[in-house]
Image (cartoon, rainbow, N blue to C red):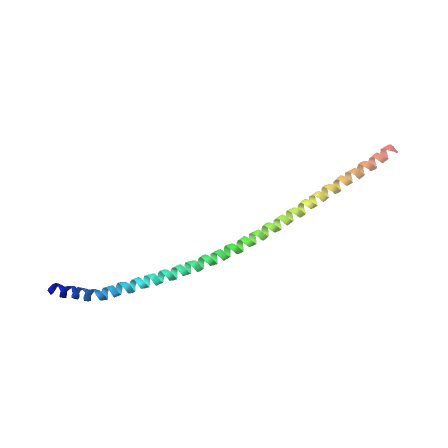
Length: 99
């Protein structure tokens, strides 16, 4: 009977320790949940910022492409004007030389 009583005493003595350990583990779990939620929110905000930055960079690339197209068009136009000018000068010189 002594063993049964001692086991009961031990179980009665351990109940507060078990309750304290359960409370500590519950606090740790809740803090982990908060940390996970905070990190998830942070990651979501960071992803949104990254998406905004990507959109801005896409717009910048689009603007640069348009600028390059305009420059090419201007270059081709300038070359055409120079060729027409040279042909006009040569024609005028040829007409002067033949007269």
